[in-house]
Image 1: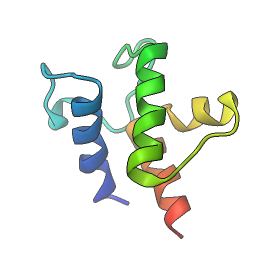
Image 2: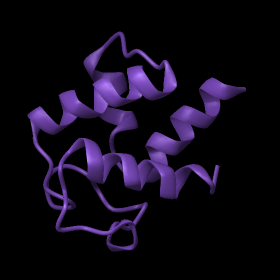
Image 3: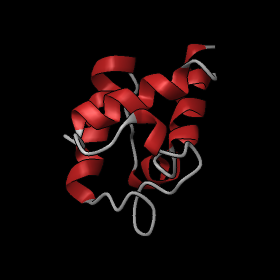
Length: 84
């Protein structure tokens, strides 16, 4: 899973157009929404598209997506669990 974290950081920077950030600027345990990176609902939709296109993961309910999108680490854990 540790190899997924830098990959996800890169994808988030690209997908969300966060050109002012480098992967090392993002703490994998930092909250993505609210007080952390400060992402919003539009960003959440972009992450959903990324998860579907890049990893084949579809979310069937909003609460599940909300829990997965807590941090880079929780996204990596979700991807890892779908690969098993």
